[in-house]
Length: 98
Image (cartoon, rainbow, N blue to C red; front, side, top):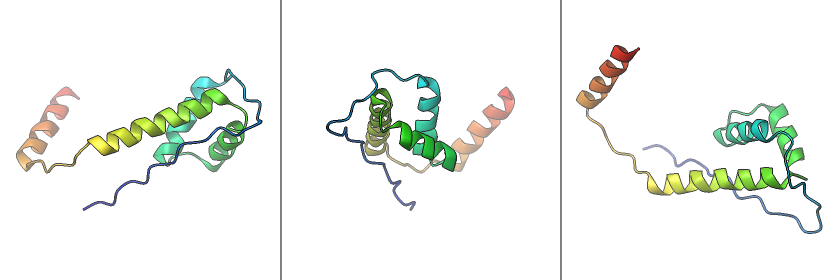
């Protein structure tokens, strides 16, 4: 049985901090959020994004949304065994399409 995946915690808004209401790099930040949560971000991406979170409200909100969605999926999805016949059938269909 596989180990349960560690789900990151939600970020909290700090008091007395003036956060930006708009992100100048929204698409790049969303990519970085997903890389971070997938464990695929480089150290440079991690460093940049953690510094960026100190002042960017949209990115905090996007990060928390991604974490919440992943947590809901983990809570709702169930691993089930699949027969070798089904696996082979899927593989053959993929091969046909490719």
